[in-house]
Length: 636
Image (tube, rainbow, N blue to C red; front, side, top):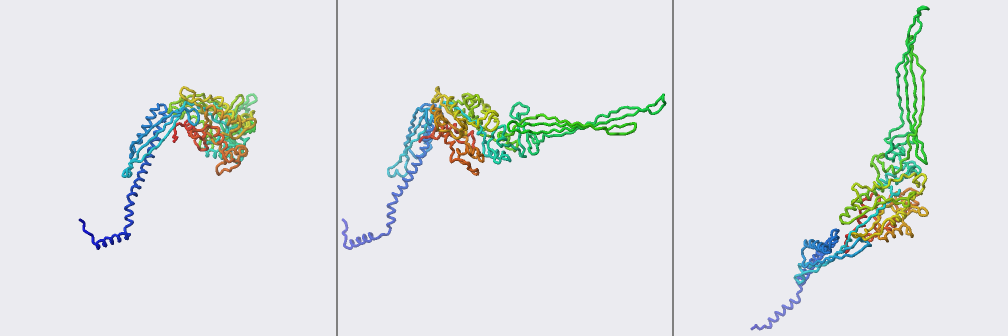
């Protein structure tokens, strides 16, 4: 059947095989041929894995959106089933835009967890969205691995928005009379820097006798600004009156810069007066003849009226503005005799009288007047807004902001406003109640906090609100304010419909104590028993949360002021360049104390919002309000 192999044939085949065995050419190609298949599948699996990871990222985002949709403000008032449906709808709508998967499974879990304290408000609802899907492989299917499993979980929680009562206490102490911007601070310092005060003053202090503290407000010609004592008296005939006094030339000018001294001369030519005379000019003894002649008198009266003003300064009371009126009258004239044709001068007459009256009383302008009337001296801007002005405006804007949030969350927010500074004679607290506790939606649209805020105190001089009352400048009674608020604010509830609202105390302050407590106390809130931080803790222990807007006490405002450097600067960090460090400390101890007073927020950080110069206090207050009431947040 097969041909028999000869011995020669066997030798030929054996040689071929031997040569084939020893020939090494073409090895690389053979190895590559064997390796290309697994390398191709490895690259393909890498592509499949990358696609799966991208799909997982996109599905994670869909799960996040679904969890947040389940706890949106609208869903918080719906059933658990509605929340689950909202989560499913959101997830499915997002997943429908994706490709490259199959067997997608999503499970939304809704949990309601009662809570009345901690970092959240009201009743906590938690939504957990879990999904699982098969990412379709392009290359793995060739080896039987058609898909890769991707999965993930997202969770979001939101508090049932509660009904809340807000108690807003605003610092009305003199230290809040600081310009709200760096530019304003620089302008006030420059305007009060003169031969009397080489450093100037950053604060818009409001006092009747500013010269006793070396505060001089001058116009661009170096004339001192003097205010009528009726300047701030509405309805007075001299309301808004002010003058410019040239101390070197002893001249008084009106507010427009026109000199008030004046001199005028009037000349009156009187009608000629003619008198008839006679003399015997002939005839006989028995029949004399008379001739007649006339004497005409002409007179001129010159009246010179000189009005001058002078001032009498005082270190214990108002400046006296005296008006002097000097009236000089001279009368001259001639007589003309028609008999002889002679004209002769008559003997002149003179009178010189001076009357003096009190024209006005005044107080020298202070930093407060300067900031409110800057444009009257320097042209522009018309005024320099103060921190207090910005605070009051921020409180006004907070009302519609809070009303909009209350409408969105379908809850009731009530607000009551207070100011605090120092305890006046006959009062028991430094706190003044400005409004009653009122639903924010019931305030009139034209309501402004300025309309209820106390008028700025017009102090007699530094340390003394009046000439007979010296409080040693202790005008920020933080401890007594906290005691009042603790006694005034009722215990907090959970804020659920029909139950006691939750309670929030909002403070707007620069945080610097300056108060009587045995002796004068300055600096940050204290930790000792029965002191400020202990009172904060007592308030929080009753379920009342504290949020603070810190209008930072600026160290640059204290530069070159010896008293401030010794008593205030050590509690604050160094000012920014180019200001010298002075006696500044290493950190803001005022802020640290305020953070200890405040309640924790959602992240655990204290509910403290800091604003410095150039910051917008309105925006900061609204941000603090929103942060305090923050509800929806991702937790995983």
